[in-house]
Image 1 (spheres, rainbow, N blue to C red):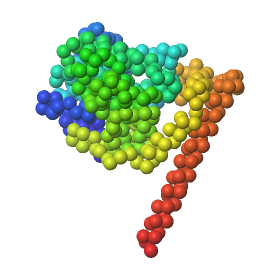
Image 2: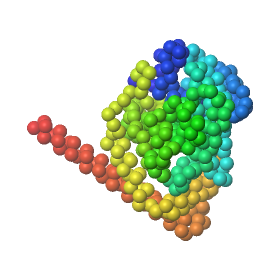
Image 3: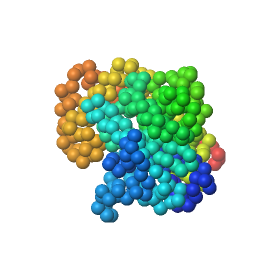
Length: 382
């Protein structure tokens, strides 16, 4: 089946005047936010640059023919997607602005966003999901511990800045993974005058929220414009609490790898729908909820602190750092666990024990389900 890259081949020759903005366009621009446009696209308050020009400057940073490494978990297909976008009538002339990229390792803060003038009287605010940085991952884990993380506050401020930069434009918001969460959070907690200009908000396999926001007046004002899209065996998009109904789409990948938006199947101008999440997806959701429910809030906070104290013990800043020097990282992690305060170490081991128990339970359910299917098949054959 086809994916985002095939969509660019199929429909890239159609302008938005010929074929209006759709959910696939949304995911393409959400993935575009992972490109490092520092010193290429002006920050909020600055000017704009055509996508073709920005792409040329970006690729000039790399030797011709060199594979661009996006990090351990960011799709390597993104540079290829950008090359295809340049050659289309649909995306090539779009203008980019308001590039923001913030990272504070010590405070576990990671935020990045990009604004795209789509050419149909609107701008799309693309919030970057979790990248290769350990600080970004720690902030994600903190979502299960605190009502609001720094990136969510920054998302609200960013939306406000873009709304002032484009006072008469319609606004679309979106992001993949954590970026989807940030898009929804910004839309809910921005000023009401900005909310009225929002036309659509997409959370592309983004996690939910620690706190219940469904009953808040701020949420109700924008709820009818929020769309959540998750793959059939979603893991990330099922985390925490979701208030909005989810559209479930088919993915060519398996398990956690379905989080990769390039695995989602496209037909025409839409993703291929399925009736609901798979049994495995529901089981993953139940396992994670059970894990969080059994861990008190204070225990969660100690677990997050302990986990990232171990992961950063070698001086690693990114997942790539851990991957490239595995032996040194492993030795540093072992020392960090040994030197850790007892209550933090106990919280770490307790959390892993709970997770192991939940996953063993899920594996036993899988085994039982498989046996039941085999027995049913034999009965039918007889």
